[in-house]
Length: 510
Ligand code: SF4
Image 1 (cartoon, rainbow, N blue to C red):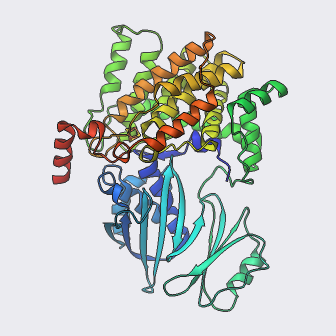
Image 2 (image 1 turned 120 degrees about the vertical axis):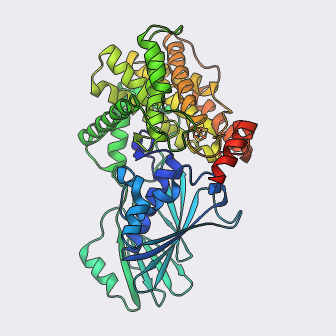
């Protein structure tokens, strides 16, 4: 599947973590569609690494929210456990054996009214993206962007005539088959499938992602070099190329795609406003007033760095404080780094008087940088690649977007990205005790400042000595080499300090 621009500038989601909260909602939504029955109990087993973080990131709440039919942008997720219990659903949380499942995996066993159980295993792979790995222990690859038909049967079905991807296997009690299509299968076909001999249950699983099914597997735009060449030869801006790319991959009109980005910008503005109010963080490790303090100092002209950067930083802090209180934010590319893009671009919008459409174009440029990174195998998950893949990437794509507002030179855009990314290579993921609070919130501040400084350098004509594509590859290299203790394991870096250990102990005792 090709990466959507709206996976980089999106999803619109409830905080605090895109991998551990939004991703878990989406796994739950898939379970909801796969099971599609009255549920009596849910037994959740998380992979071991989630042991310390699941509670702080509300992974169990998010998963249950998805299972009862809520989406990742629904504020009611906050109350999902109560809502599920009110429906008479029993909930139990446990952990999977060490090393047998990928990071950020949930195995969900659902008990239905007729005493049957269905087991689904899903993995959150970063930035809210997920994959379903198995149903009733039959290994499958079910993506949330596709149309799937899941069939349980007594016998192995002969589906050689079907035009679509067919996966099947024998589970503990019965055969499970998954058919995948790029559009909704016809009523005639569905009726034929229902009536096949031996079929016990047949469910249509429609896409849970609203930015469209990928119509192609082609990973177009694998390098900044190719992108710049195309921009120069076609005389299109990077934003225009990005809109055309998204239209081609999704089948949606360019107008639809432009409107969608303006909607994401509107959500960002709302999160900035919410960030200016006092926010009560889930764990209260940060006081939720840092954005207020900085904004006050900006207004009183007490700061030494001056200009628009401190204002943008105060907005980034505010969005992160709102995210930390389970507010609705736009992941860009993740929730842990979701303050940087709105901080930078809402400030530029206000201070320079840019229109929403012009800022949306800059966001398309940010998204295009993320697509190239994704195609070059960058992980946007702190638990896979460290904070460099979250704060580092968010800062770098922002630098590119900022330059695009002031220059038509695509080379300046990609060099801003490279200059910025280099500064945060090696940044570790070390949240203390689990919640996306410390150091995550204030790291967004350095992401904003780095983006502006790098944009300024690129606009002044400074180039990255290492070509931009090679800088992205260097990020992949560092992501792979980074030890697992420094990837959201809550044992290394700041999480290893005496203060962090004390906080962790206190939280565990609670
Ligand atoms: S330290 Fe960085 S990567 Fe890790 S949870 Fe916080 S923001 Fe995300």
